[in-house]
Image (cartoon, rainbow, N blue to C red):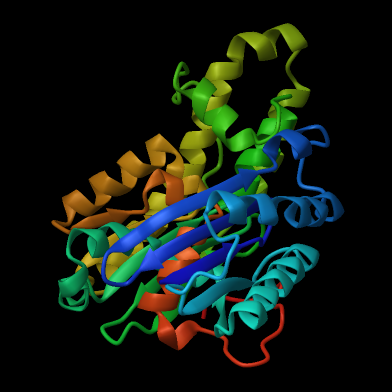
Length: 340
């Protein structure tokens, strides 16, 4: 059994993963209600909350006593907020010493990269390695509040970044756009909810889709465009147009993600397409990526909704599925750790 620990931002999470059977339990404490008061995550408060929440989560997980079945502890060592990462690692190492169990560090982004395979393992744990080979090489897209990355997982399970944002991440653009619109934190889900009632064609926003040979995303211009548009609208006009503004703004984000993904599908020979990260829980994005994969006759693997945000299941699973990406020994926190 592998115990996963996640504390990179504002989610305190534990998960147990059995390589022979799959996930046997997940426990998460969200801090959204606390940080909502401040309009975003406050690092010092987030660290304090992790300290408060991990021990009650241990009790819920039935890990108050030394569990003989846990053979490894996997903890996020980056990227993320330094204080939050440090607390998670200290907690993991304390358990490792108390239980005499090895502790390894997991790259949070590699956890996202492998999270779409959790369901594949659950379907046939014994045949996972053989099943995985049928999906590689794979083109993957991680979309979250802090990252927007297109990457390849090759046949040897090596990861290579193919394109990433040069400014704001897609989730950051959605949250900032929501703030400009006067919507509460977290903004991305608010935009998605309101956009469902809007006409995406009424307001057109710049999609900033770079030429095929420019492997990058850019979302800062989209946010600026929204700000300029709002400066010309009265409060009454904004209220009336809010669903259409949300729909058009969300569509501009999704169109850029899908457009660059399509370019890279055409440029490579991939057996599958995958989507993960917190923003991948957006229904419109999931549908768009599925339709893109179908248009090329490719299977599409999308992380389960409960594994799209910060979660310990993907950390425990990555410790099993991605041994080459693990930090061992006296590893340190890596707030700016990259996928590759």
